[in-house]
Image (cartoon, rainbow over all chains, first blue to last red; front, side):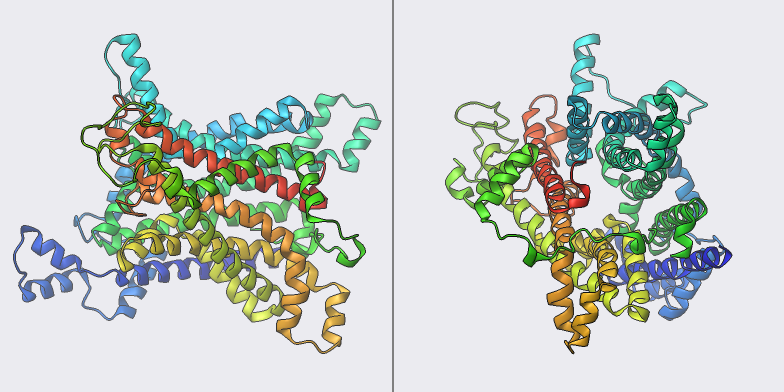
Length: 323
Length: 302
């Protein structure tokens, strides 16, 4: 067991370093120079001496390998340096925008769990009934519908409905207010994005719950439980669901990690200033430090979510660490 | 992901010779009868494919010609789905958009799928250091956000349909390779592979003629899922302005700009392209699910 844990934890390192190398190389392959852009934003030609000074300031005059080692060493110390574009610490830039994205992601996850697990279970229990067909079709539709289009349409509906009800169109607020300051305003901003993202999320989770439940329901121990006369509710809750939820939890973990990286489109639709927006801006500005930090943040969430899931699996299912 | 390979029972390890050869037609009829939802999906895909292939003959107008006398016009007999803010016929743009979606969807799925198939089977067959190395590379690519990959590819090579295909294909490769590898790992241990080796066959022959056909079922199921996902990714990228560029007709692109601006006065600009995306991907997903049930006996009756 310890051998497995140690080797699995060590595997995180090459992935993180590989991702660091990839973002480092990709950013530097993009043509352009942040110093030229920064100095020349007023138009006209740029003094090469000023560019050199700017390079020295940002550490861009060092050899690439030194720059890379600096970046990786900084990452392991959780020190991301300062944003090349704004001059503010990267951690500050991210901290200002993370709450809104995190709130949407967490709310979407809650929506997904609340919808997917009960419906997926019912669908499995009533396999091939009309309920099952409705649930499955809704789930496939959720996977097929682009969340940004759902966002546009939901805004459209809110506009029309509010216009019809109050006489004036109402739009959800776009600036972030912490929940404890103004809960109503905070929720009215986050609820639509969370629902549009949550639908797809719920759809994926629902399918996984259904197929995991179907598999578990065929196991011998379920038959045994039925044979000894246990009431159905206990069989489902205590015996079946408990075991079926393992792959579902895995999926929720991995999808959550994907979600953080995939909020770009949703934030664009709802005009929200979260980390997805920041990421696009950072790449467009050629802000190496900020892009690197944001990419490493999403990669780290993904890698550690995977690690947690694998360790959880190994703990729960001894066959895996032997295999 | 957890490596479940040792417990995975290969679904497609079927003795092909033992199965009575049936005619293609009766196969198709049996599929339609057993999978009504899958047949509906297949029909939706076919409609989209015909629209994309015969766009010139189906579309009543040119997808790029502006008619400033008919801007943001509601759906009518002259313009079935109305017109956009430049007076372009939405129906014609959606028909031509099907072609873009078709090109992007199929090329990404096929290129990414084949690359994943080769890497996955090779990784399982050779094992050892190559396997270890490839797995780490896949880890990195899978953890990497798609949007950054796309932003970088477009910033480096410029925008355009081919670069969009590159950006979408790269993340598909490791996902295909992972799944193929775990099926191939189980197949590698089967006696007929040992037999092939004992006959002195080369690696290429064993991989291509003995291992690849047996992971085909898994592979085909994934391929249909990939087409849908690639179409969705293309739409998202085009919507963000990172994908296909004007004046090419693409569904995601049609939702950018005008769709939000004219949402309350001309909602058809926003509604129809989104419906086209959703229905197409829906069709591919239905068909893919049915294909899985039909090809994978382990999952049958589920």
